[in-house]
Length: 434
Ligand code: C2O
Ligand code: CU
Image (cartoon, rainbow, N blue to C red; front, side, top):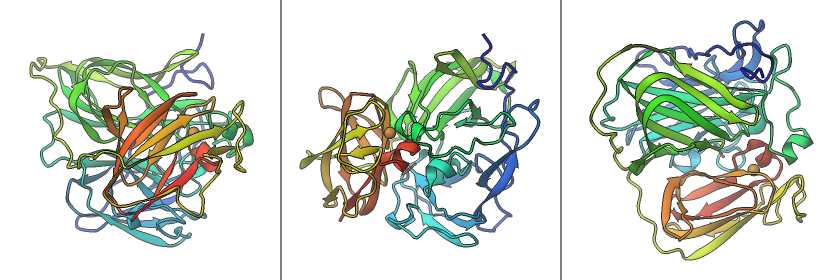
């Protein structure tokens, strides 16, 4: 069985990501969205793929901010379409959240917008279009945003690994069937070519790396196989784990992130578990060796999050619809509590400082990754104790999960499925914190 790519039997070569320089010394950081062409498929497939991206590359440049220090980006829209930039997972000021129609007007072609915020948390985040995002993210409007700790952990390399999933035609162009009803009602826009974008570098065995995995795909859940590393998960969705954990069968839903600190034991290979077998996503080549480290994998310093109190109430978010799903009263393919799409009134108005339990009930046949803007929440374990602190929670078909969230950030915050095709076809609502 040939399984190197979904498209044909040809070997996938590692694809590297060469974003141009961000700015001239002293000039403000600029992010320009514009059409571009890029080799997405391995080199032996002729033809550049027409995409849209930031600063001439997909993914966009690796932006680096410092924890607790002001960060400013001058965004310029050189697309033919409206857009806006959302800073996924950053607990920022509402006006900077980049959601057209809720926190700002869409940025028209030829116009710009200046985003300014001071990230309170260090960690692995990302940025992406939040306008027609099921199409604009699929076309390439996404990139990594790393917020550095004041004193980062002692590693030899800090590597961003961004996962993407493409649906391409035989001549290597994006398939233009965006938003078709079949995708919307099922798992979303599943690609036929998946890969990980890695920086162009080699590592030595014995070196310690921090690997920052970001699932920037539109709809694909990645069950991952990671080879050539021995280490632990140190953060999820940008938030440090109090105690590092072994990476057993790691799964990343769209928008989720996972940081590993690990020692190189051989060629670092990332694969996706797939019904056709292990599917290679990309490799960090190894050359040379150094003596292995003997010190333990360190926990990252905690971010400054306040502890939630006892919940004042429970909000239920019942996911309904989709193919083979039960009926609902909403008028889209998907619904939250029988309401499809953004309602005029928020799902809830919550007083700043209130802790609320959110019950996610997946009454559908498909997994959903539910994302809340402007906050992180605790996923509650079966016995009700707070588990991981995340911004996106994966709920499998016919399962339920409780979240506990301290709503301490005032504003209008979206709550939606981050399978962006599902969001576009009904799974979107919002919460107002006053
Ligand atoms: Cu990654 Cu509503 O966003
Ligand atoms: Cu969904």
